[in-house]
Length: 146
Image 1: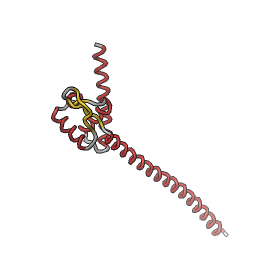
Image 2 (image 1 turned 90 degrees about the vertical axis):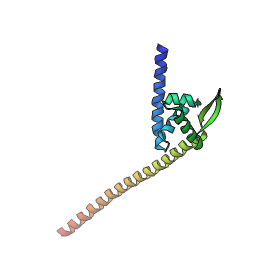
Image 3 (image 1 turned 30 degrees about the vertical axis):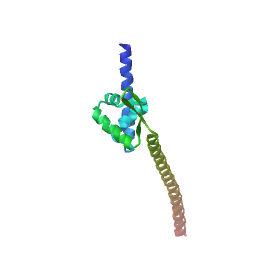
Image 4 (image 1 turned 120 degrees about the vertical axis):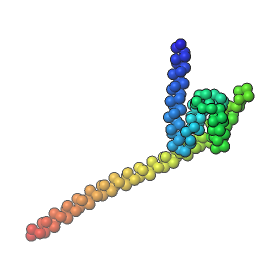
C-alpha cells in the first residue's frame, strides 16, 4: 500500500512538472500537445509511443501524429527499440531551440536594462534642470527687487 501511494505521488509530481514545462515551451511556440511530450521525454528519458500516450492520457494515433511532427521539426528522434516498439528521445535540436529562446530573452533583458538606465539618467537630468530653473528664477526675483 505504501509503495503504491509513493509511486502515485511521484507520478503526480512528474505530471505537475510536465505541466509547468509545457507552459514554458508554449511561450516559445511549441503547441501544448507537443510540449507535453517534450517535457515528459526531457524528464524521463527515452520512452515508447504507447507509454507516452498512457502517461499523458491521449490516444495512440494522436501520439503518433505529434511524434511525427516533432521528428519533422528535429526535436525528437528514435533512439532504439524495446521489442518492436520505438523509443523516442529529445534531440540537440530541442536544446538549440531552448538555447536560442533564452539568448533572445537575455538580449531583450539587456535592452530593458538600458532603457531603465536611460530613464534614470533622464530623471537625474530633469532634477538638475529643475534646480537650474529655480536658481534662474531666484536670480530674476532678486533682479526685480533692485
